[in-house]
Length: 370
Image (cartoon, rainbow, N blue to C red; front, side, top):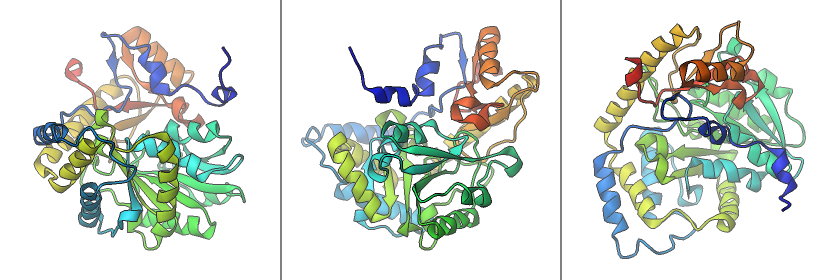
């Protein structure tokens, strides 16, 4: 059997590969799988929505009235950002938007700017369709933040858009409004689009509250932002997300998705609308406290392994530097797995700049560390 040649253009997703190495004995710090149980109130409402007499019907390709209104009101309350119904679209998880946007924005040989280290899904979907990935550096000497000066040397006439992700996967780094304003100004001056992955906006620590890039004046002219119910409400397995912002980009993605799926199910749209309009601050605070407590305890454990790092203010990961004696991140992780039955994600999975680092998930049962 002959399969498509495009399979040679990209690699298997890193967590698909690592999953094959896991046994019950392994202490797995690999995937960022939100493990705090969802609020029981939401689950009970979901059961109610599933039992609705229309729950089994096709949902349609856009947001229903409840979902649209709930997301519009949430953005207004959370970020003071005004949205129109034509400026939003429900997603089958944030990764739905990440993987399908290249189909809407790139032609063959067009270029996209991708962070290194960065979420692997920013890269491979572009490669699948013949796009060219141009990496920009997120380096320790810059505190893993974007260098506008460096970006200037990466843009060409073929550059279509840039992926920006804060709070960041894998580094846990955050961005302030003033830093996002610099990125918007840069993108406008070079006539390129911004896709802002804000999936971890509600997973922040130590008093930091993540902004939306749409808070920047004029950002909506060139930007869209992706959000996730997976992290915010622990709905990871339900596959629920959204994209908001520039109307033309939203319409282009909607056209692509009309050929790829049949929309977010009606019960899940109702659940999303209910969760956004009945945001349980007490439950959310307890979730953040759980992650923070584990972050701090895991940090102490990692120091015993000789790893160096700064505590992240966002996302679900510690980005740690491996000991100088280690050959590279993959070698370090394989030895740790063999000798101690501990699985970390090699930083090289997130780009060449990650070769001396590992990503450590903080959403993991730490009873064995205590």
